[in-house]
Image (cartoon, rainbow, N blue to C red; front, side, top):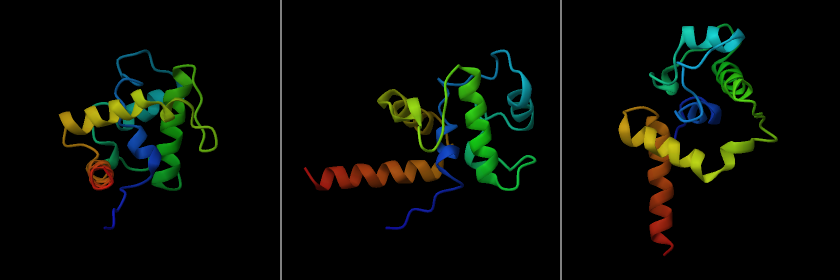
Amino acid sequence: MIIIQNRCLETWLLGNRRIFNPKQPLQGLLADYVQHYDVYENDPELMGRFNCRNHADFHFAYLKSIFEAKGLSYSKKFPGVVQEQYYLNELKKRIDKTEHLKTFQKFINFCDNIRQNFR
Protein backbone atom coordinates (compact mmCIF):
# COMPACT_ATOMS: atom_id res chain seq x y z
CA MET A 1 0.00 0.00 0.00
CA ILE A 2 1.19 3.48 -0.82
CA ILE A 3 0.12 6.39 1.35
CA ILE A 4 0.48 9.79 -0.23
CA GLN A 5 0.91 12.41 2.45
CA ASN A 6 -0.63 15.78 1.70
CA ARG A 7 2.20 18.19 2.45
CA CYS A 8 4.40 17.26 5.44
CA LEU A 9 4.40 15.93 9.00
CA GLU A 10 3.92 19.44 10.37
CA THR A 11 0.72 19.69 8.31
CA TRP A 12 -0.73 16.80 10.29
CA LEU A 13 0.59 18.18 13.58
CA LEU A 14 -1.28 21.45 12.94
CA GLY A 15 -4.48 19.43 13.37
CA ASN A 16 -4.25 19.34 17.18
CA ARG A 17 -7.01 21.65 18.39
CA ARG A 18 -5.98 21.33 22.03
CA ILE A 19 -2.59 22.95 21.50
CA PHE A 20 -4.02 25.89 19.57
CA ASN A 21 -7.14 28.02 19.75
CA PRO A 22 -7.37 31.08 17.49
CA LYS A 23 -9.48 32.84 20.13
CA GLN A 24 -6.40 33.15 22.36
CA PRO A 25 -4.52 36.46 22.05
CA LEU A 26 -2.37 36.32 18.93
CA GLN A 27 0.76 38.32 18.19
CA GLY A 28 3.35 38.66 15.49
CA LEU A 29 3.61 36.11 12.74
CA LEU A 30 1.07 33.79 14.34
CA ALA A 31 -1.61 36.49 14.02
CA ASP A 32 -0.70 36.87 10.33
CA TYR A 33 -0.77 33.12 9.80
CA VAL A 34 -4.20 32.73 11.42
CA GLN A 35 -5.59 35.63 9.43
CA HIS A 36 -4.30 33.96 6.27
CA TYR A 37 -5.58 30.47 7.18
CA ASP A 38 -7.13 29.32 10.46
CA VAL A 39 -6.00 25.71 11.00
CA TYR A 40 -8.36 25.36 13.95
CA GLU A 41 -11.43 25.73 11.73
CA ASN A 42 -10.02 24.67 8.36
CA ASP A 43 -8.24 21.56 7.13
CA PRO A 44 -4.45 21.99 7.48
CA GLU A 45 -3.95 19.77 4.41
CA LEU A 46 -5.68 22.40 2.25
CA MET A 47 -3.57 25.31 3.49
CA GLY A 48 -1.36 27.16 1.03
CA ARG A 49 2.16 28.44 1.48
CA PHE A 50 1.54 32.09 2.50
CA ASN A 51 4.75 33.99 1.70
CA CYS A 52 7.18 31.08 2.16
CA ARG A 53 9.07 29.40 -0.68
CA ASN A 54 6.98 26.22 -0.33
CA HIS A 55 4.14 24.66 1.63
CA ALA A 56 6.37 22.66 3.95
CA ASP A 57 8.30 25.75 5.09
CA PHE A 58 5.07 27.60 5.87
CA HIS A 59 3.49 24.68 7.70
CA PHE A 60 6.66 24.26 9.77
CA ALA A 61 6.77 28.00 10.58
CA TYR A 62 3.06 28.02 11.52
CA LEU A 63 3.48 25.05 13.87
CA LYS A 64 6.61 26.55 15.42
CA SER A 65 4.75 29.83 16.02
CA ILE A 66 1.89 28.01 17.74
CA PHE A 67 4.35 26.25 20.03
CA GLU A 68 6.22 29.46 20.81
CA ALA A 69 2.94 31.18 21.74
CA LYS A 70 2.39 28.37 24.28
CA GLY A 71 5.92 28.66 25.67
CA LEU A 72 6.90 25.37 24.02
CA SER A 73 9.46 24.53 21.39
CA TYR A 74 9.34 22.38 18.28
CA SER A 75 12.01 21.33 15.85
CA LYS A 76 12.45 18.34 13.61
CA LYS A 77 15.36 17.19 15.75
CA PHE A 78 13.62 17.90 19.09
CA PRO A 79 9.88 17.55 18.46
CA GLY A 80 8.89 17.90 22.13
CA VAL A 81 5.25 17.34 23.07
CA VAL A 82 4.22 16.02 19.66
CA GLN A 83 5.76 12.73 20.80
CA GLU A 84 3.27 12.45 23.67
CA GLN A 85 0.28 10.12 23.46
CA TYR A 86 -2.18 12.95 24.16
CA TYR A 87 -0.99 14.77 21.02
CA LEU A 88 -1.78 11.75 18.85
CA ASN A 89 -5.12 11.34 20.61
CA GLU A 90 -6.04 14.94 19.75
CA LEU A 91 -5.18 14.35 16.10
CA LYS A 92 -7.36 11.24 16.12
CA LYS A 93 -10.22 13.28 17.60
CA ARG A 94 -9.85 15.74 14.75
CA ILE A 95 -10.18 13.06 12.08
CA ASP A 96 -13.10 11.45 13.92
CA LYS A 97 -15.05 14.72 14.25
CA THR A 98 -14.27 16.33 10.88
CA GLU A 99 -13.50 15.50 7.29
CA HIS A 100 -10.06 17.08 7.78
CA LEU A 101 -6.63 15.45 7.46
CA LYS A 102 -7.72 12.73 5.04
CA THR A 103 -4.19 11.47 4.36
CA PHE A 104 -3.56 11.25 8.10
CA GLN A 105 -6.77 9.20 8.39
CA LYS A 106 -5.42 6.81 5.74
CA PHE A 107 -2.14 6.54 7.64
CA ILE A 108 -3.94 5.76 10.92
CA ASN A 109 -6.09 3.14 9.18
CA PHE A 110 -2.95 1.57 7.72
CA CYS A 111 -1.29 1.46 11.16
CA ASP A 112 -4.42 -0.05 12.70
CA ASN A 113 -4.49 -2.76 10.01
CA ILE A 114 -0.86 -3.64 10.67
CA ARG A 115 -1.50 -3.75 14.42
CA GLN A 116 -4.47 -6.11 13.93
CA ASN A 117 -2.47 -8.42 11.66
CA PHE A 118 0.31 -8.80 14.23
CA ARG A 119 -1.89 -9.78 17.15
